Image 1: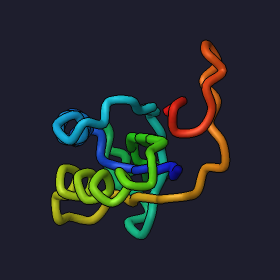
Image 2: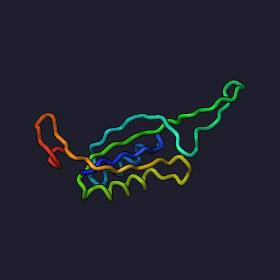
Image 3: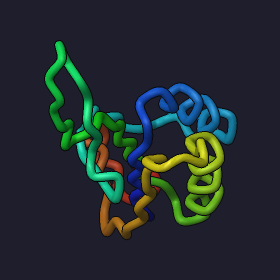
Image 4: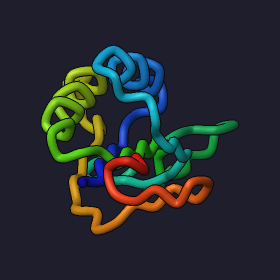
Length: 112
């Protein structure tokens, strides 16, 4: 099993969620986060004063998937979230040793 974490632009959330649903992936955790990468934030002007916004709003999507679903899910996230502009985000894939469903105590892929 693998954990897929994607950091995307907030306005792309619905597109990514719908695209994942179209390939049969429904369970996910979504968190509003803030951060920056190479763009290092940006400068804005508010009431005539310039200030720097260091952390930009982003969305973090987390999925735990069977190994066979990971490649398709990652490709789907990239296709749906890509704008071609700086700040599109990142996708991280890491191994998951164990999953246990609390309600039924099922373990492994059956719990996903």
